[in-house]
Length: 483
Ligand code: BG6
Image (cartoon, rainbow, N blue to C red):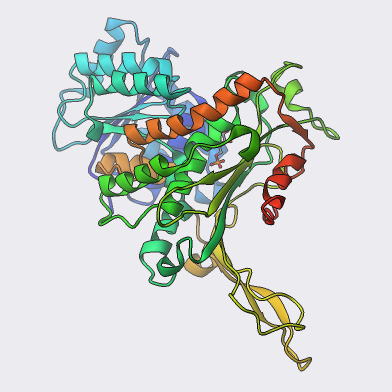
């Protein structure tokens, strides 16, 4: 469904995120007929260039980050024609005036959004300038990228600086995991089917495992990442959001605040974690042809973690006693993200001596790659050999099932940017959610800092440090394979 013609101002438009994600996402939306050619995307950044220069930069970004099969010359040309550019130093009045002139007066019929793809220290000043110049009108929206704070006090300060100029209903905090197709599918799976919800509780679920494994190292992001680490970079936002969507109660409706209220309740129900017992931090060492984390960030003494595994509990009626195991890391064996819900074994087995083992039903929702859902079952081994059990999988790979093999999975940013234009906040984090997540994460980080220990080293290409395996073995459980 096409959205209304809109004006989108992208601060930091020459940066990595804009080139890799935003511009390609907008291109796809135009190519698919959702972004009208009357829309305008106005880049704003410090670099001195004109609209032509920005179009060249965008053209290069499309050529690099859009698959050649999807790059249609006609759509590419029409997309580039929607771009404009204003050089902007946030401290200069003249530059803001130039932006105001380019934008023109706000028009209530024409959605307007300001996308802050810049470091968080600029959020406050940009929001203030937008408001002071009257650029947002009564309906303009502001979009901010992570990191949203470094801890609870800094997140609060950011929330307050935005709240001075924008109502919560106009603030869009991006967690791009919420825009991933399969993450939204988790809601469809749970609430559009009657099959799973009756089993989705402590009576039937043994435990939940959430894994976000990456093969990449920190690459050129060392200076940012080394002051942050996996707990702040991934767990506080992406993994906790996945946990929330898995554990939340059914919202009464699919309205933004109904969904976000339910997620907030989950965050508030998270039990405090014993950092020494329930959390493992790791850092990748060197491997054949692969530099260690310490070498990547150029600090032999760095204590930043590139891996975290932990055991959490959601203390409410539905989940009491069910562990949620989370893990994420860089330089692991494979790129794999999934949510796996492991169900309890049948109460009694009539198949003694039948080989295999009854039970082990696991519902795995695979975020990437090969998005899809699998249900592990125990079935009879085919053949005349009598009753022998064997594991098998019901496998629904979305690209095959839903797109005849040729389905392109839209990138998270495509959905999220269009939601901003439509004014739908369902897939964006509310200020109180972000704060609740920090409130849970902060004591874990504080405990690490107090102990001052180094993270356990793990081999690149492995599944993480031994201790992470122990975290589950101790409970008589195992991590699923990273593959
Ligand atoms: C980002 C993190 O938010 O998510 C990165 O800052 C991480 O460190 C990335 O690599 C992972 O996103 P995706 O979509 O590639 O799984």
